[in-house]
Structures are given as C-alpha cells and as structure tokens.
Image (cartoon, rainbow, N blue to C red; front, top):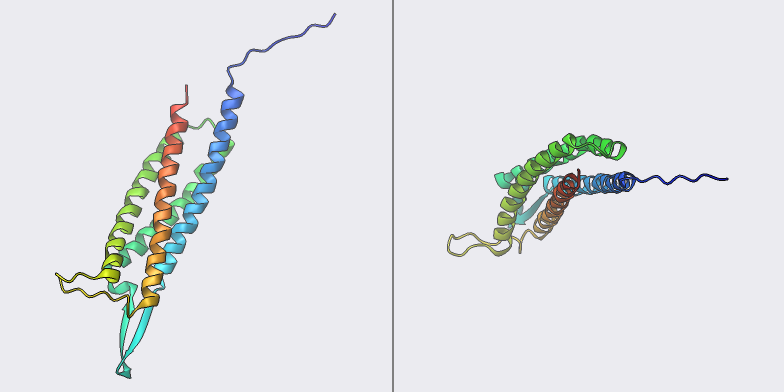
Amino acid sequence: MAVSTIELGSGAGRASGANRGVAMLDFILRVVAIVATLASAIAMGTTNESLPFFTQFIRFRAKYSDLPTFTFFVAANSIVCAYLILSLALSVSHIMRSGAQKSRVVLIFLDAAMLALLTSAASAAAAIVYLAHKGNRRANWFAICQQFNSFCERISGSLIGSFGGIVVFVILILMSAVTLSRRP
C-alpha cells in the first residue's frame, strides 16, 4: 500500500520566484538608467561648437560650460550615474535574497532623492534648450540654434537620455513599492 502525502503550502515559493523576477527587472532597469545618465553627461560635457565671424581669427563659440545650468546638468547626471552603479550591489543582493525588505526601503528613499536631483537638472536644462531653439523676443534673447546647429542637436539629445533616466526611476520606485506592499 502506497502512502501519499499532500503538502499544503502558503505559496511562498511562487512569491519568492516573482520577487526574484522583479529583482532581476530592477537590475536591468538600473543598467539602462546607468547608460542613459552616463550618455547624457558625456554628450552634454563634450558639447562645443565654434563659428567663424568675418575672419578666421574672430570666432563665436558655444560651449556647455558657458551656462551654469548645463554644468549643473552634467554634475547631476554624473552623481546619479555613480549612485546607480553603487546601487547595483543592493540590486544583486535582492536577486540572491528576495525577502530583503529594509534594503528595498532604503533604495526607495535614495531612488526618490536621485529622481528629484535628475528631474531638477533636466528641467532646468530643458528651459535653456528651449530658449536656445526659440529665443525670447521680450527679453531680447535670440535663438542661437540657427547658427549653432550641432551644439543644439547634442544638447537636445542629451536631454532625451536624461528624461529617459527619469522614467526609469519612476518605474523603479513603483516596482519597489509594489514589491514591499505584497509582503505579509
């Protein structure tokens, strides 16, 4: 006579597997955000263009460091990128130990702080990029993008990467919050 046993479980194995999947997605999104913020910082930090004026000895120059907003943008993207690289260690630990709660709470707070820093830098830079493209007749600020086309293309592209990083941070924060809320 064969004896069979039925084990009744609480489904913890499935929850652990789901948390591991979320942790892996968290790791992948952090790598994507690293690429986006690093590319934004490099693109903005290496942006400059010179145009000749009447002779070759007199030139107009546009450089990212001429505007403090762009300098803040490069610094903020660099800080956020460094934070993301350091946070990969916690992300890997969440893959190994899917039940970690305290480190997820810490990541939510730090991710929110980095989101605020990145949003402020990208928004300030977006305002300057808008002025570079459109100008402001009332303030007598002329659009420079007709003359400095390459400069404007690079700074606009840099903004795209930074705003992509913002979207990834929002997703990371929401994922961590949902993961913590499913805990018993």
